[in-house]
Image 1 (spheres, rainbow, N blue to C red):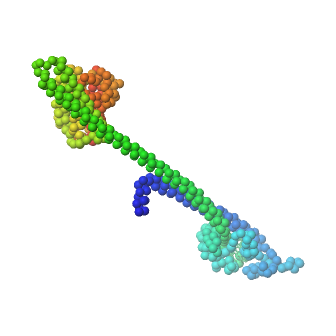
Image 2 (image 1 turned 135 degrees about the vertical axis):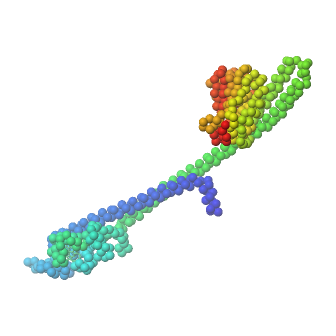
Image 3 (image 1 turned 30 degrees about the vertical axis):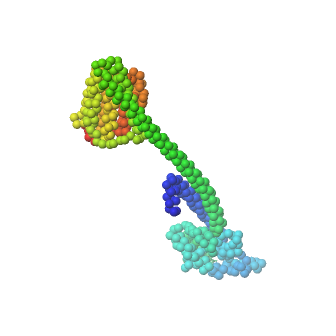
Length: 495
Ligand code: HEC
């Protein structure tokens, strides 16, 4: 059921589904990129903040160290540091009797962070390798130890995004090296200036950043969602419209086809209705001619009767040609493909054309290769083309002229079948006109001749039916050559 619906959808809207998929990918990609780049941006902001805090932390420590530690009053919060007991001046007394003790930088900072954690804002820690610790409170955790080891190998900074007590944190750690000031208290441990003493790490809470990121992601998702929805709506709308238009187009095409069909049906019926009485007229006039015009018949009446017969025959050929043309136009022309020996067709047509040529007192010749070419074609149609060309040539060539049929293969492997005459020719401006159905060019078409005015346009259409073409070369008053060309793809055997 669902599969069927999907198949149906794909069948009618396949293109739109592809467009929608591409659109979805684009929008999703843009959204992903947007969220990702915000994520990168936020990390870099947090990193900047961590570095700033580290620097504040470090400068305070260095300040403390540069003074060799600082003296503060002794009280419960600040007992003397047992780790400094080796220094002779750890505890001093003022003239007024106040007790002061020396606070080393690590001690100082630890107290500051413990008492002013809220204001200080970040957790800072000083640490060192476990075997070098002055104070075990400063022992490194796993990450810090790994970072210290990396510093030993030359790293200058370590980062970690992590959770501390369920809250997201960015941790940053940098190495601390021994300078002159440090030796006052750490010299005892055997350190020398420039040696890696340990490191300071700061942990920046990421909560605010993460909140911002969530808000940003929410905005990105909703704006992209809206844009995606709009685009998708547009695609669906467009696809529907396109489908409607296509359907309308199909319907009108169908209508046109059926109109064409009924037109050619009509013509077929009409020509039958016309042909039957015409045949009767022709037949009876023939019989009448045979019967009554013996020795007694007047030549005038015989002439009239002959004209009746000729007109009938002319009308019949017009009807036949109209029917043929309408069938070609409607794509209903019966077309039987075969291997056609053009030599045979030419011989048959010459035989049929001979009497007409003799009557017109013309020389009718043929020039063909010894072994004539064979083409894939409909034999009846090819015969029809050639007969048309021959009878046109004979018709328009005055007495004593010459009509020549020629078949040859050219260099491109095409077969050319041409009929050349030494007739009245066609004026250049009329060349296109003579190929239009029924157009009879003045001085060219002698209406008393048998001919429908359809011969050339028929022949051209029949040639096209064979993927070929028909060309006319003519010089007014000199003669005309009409050539039909069969493409090499249809040639089975060259001449
Ligand atoms: C006034 C004395 C004094 C000076 C000066 C001093 N320190 Fe310390 N430092 C200590 C004491 C004492 C401890 C350990 C006790 C504590 O955490 O309070 C300590 C702890 C440390 C630690 C933590 C690891 C541990 O061993 O507990 C590092 C790292 C450190 N100092 C680096 C330095 C560096 C680097 C300098 C010079 C820039 C320096 N200190 C200057 C006294 C000093």
